[in-house]
Image 1: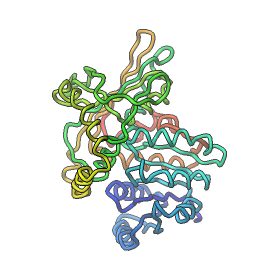
Image 2 (image 1 turned 60 degrees about the vertical axis):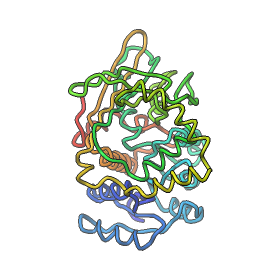
Image 3 (image 1 turned 120 degrees about the vertical axis):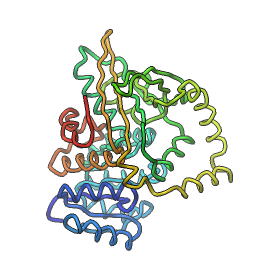
Length: 361
C-alpha cells in the first residue's frame, strides 16, 4: 500500500467498529480485517458514508498464515480481538515477525505482561508493541506519569482508582472479565508483576468534587502493571471504587476462588453462554451517558502527587485513544520494543490532544 496503513483486526466487533469509525473521521488510511467477509464489506460500506471506503482483508486469529500476510502489509496493526489471553498471542507474534507496529485495547494484566516480556524480541525485528491503549489502562497510566513528573525524587508507590458512575458493558468486556476471574490478575510488588488476592487492600480514594472521597478495593486490573512499569515504583496497585467497598472486598477473593474451581465445568459453560447472550455493547444513547472518573496517585519521600480525569463515554474514549496512538505511530513515532502508553507518547501532550473527549485537572 502506498501510504502508511492502519489495519484494525476484529473491526466488525463492538470496539473495533468504534475504532474504525474514529479512524475514518480522522482521515487515517484504514484496512478492516476479520473473519467474516460479508460483515467486513457491510462495515466498509457504512464507513464510506463518512469518509473514504476502507480496504478489507479476511483474516482469522487462528490462521497464522493469514496473520503473517496481514502484518507484512500493515504499518500498524490494532487488535480488538479478545479475550486476549486466549486469542491475542498469534497477533503479537505476527507483528514481531513482520517488524510492524502493534496496538491493542486489552484490559487483561497477564496478557499485557506477556506483550512486555516479548519486547526484547520485538526490538530485534524493529517491531513496536504498545498494549492497553484503551480506557482500561491507558488513562490511569497517562495520569500517573503526569503526576510522577511533579514529584521530587523517585516514586516509591503508585496507585489508581476508577469509579463508574453510569454506562453499560459490552459482551467483549464481559468475556475478558471472565478470563480475569479464572486466570487471576496481578499487582506490581517488588518491581515485578505478582499474583495477589482480589480485595486484599482498601483505599479511601480522594476523587475530586462532585464525586468526592470513595471507598475502593484493590482489583486485578491492568492499571497496576502499567503504573509500575511507567513510574518505576516498586509497588503499584489498581482499585475499583464501589458502594460498600468493605463488603465487596470481602467477597472478591471467594468469588475468584469459586470461578477458578468451576472453570472448564458444565456450570462454567452456562456462565459463558449467558455472557454470549449479552448485547454486543451499550447502544449509542447509553454510551453517551457513560461516565467514569479515574484518579492516579504517586508517592515518594513523604510527598504525594495526584492527577485525575473525568471520562465521558469510556468506550468512545477507547476509540479516541487507540486511533491517536495509531496516528502517531503512522507518522513515524516508533521505537522498537514494548512500551506502556505513557512511555510511547508524551503523556501530558496526549491528554491535551484528547481533551475534547473528557475533562481533566
